[in-house]
Length: 268
Image (cartoon, rainbow, N blue to C red; front, top):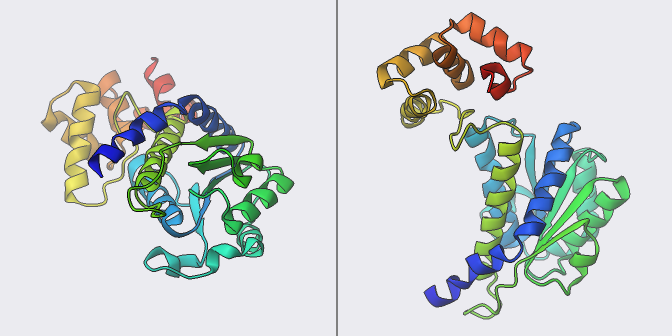
């Protein structure tokens, strides 16, 4: 298994240009007020649920910005819902329910490239005018012909025949990591390589925020902790405070004047 798993990063590396173009589509969608909607079934859908769930705590985004539709609904996250992936009509129904618009980007994820639920979602998304991305492991499948952008990671046969939760699933996880991380970086939710919009959800994250601020500002941990208190745990405001030596109110005003663009507020 380990020898086979080594093939996954190489397969992902071969499709980096397609991943970069897919990031462009996602960024354009978000900038025009749209969302990124993942659509998948089984293992592919669960991997998408995981990636979407990590975006709010990592990037400080709304849970509505990156969403996942999984065949069979929420019950399918923790157990197999047999036959749910076979309905293309359900995909259209689910997309209508979340009010898909032409401003959105829809990423259909399926290792086989033939899952009716994913194919139905991409067809409806294209008809709606939304940007479409297909993520699979075989470019010679129906899903490849339905999307604006195809990401096909050719990882080869699974060591356990037909078990696409192995190399196929690993490649999907790597691709989704790249799509959301690169897109959120382009959209300003990252400063250098730091999670500048992370939220203080528990003690561990609160301590991490202090270290992030110290790294970003070059100031001490105690100064960073003080600035965070003054900014009410807003990392962006605290960073402007420390770098420009201003108070919290002035830092917040600079960010508003820069329309939230951190580097513009810092004059960088």
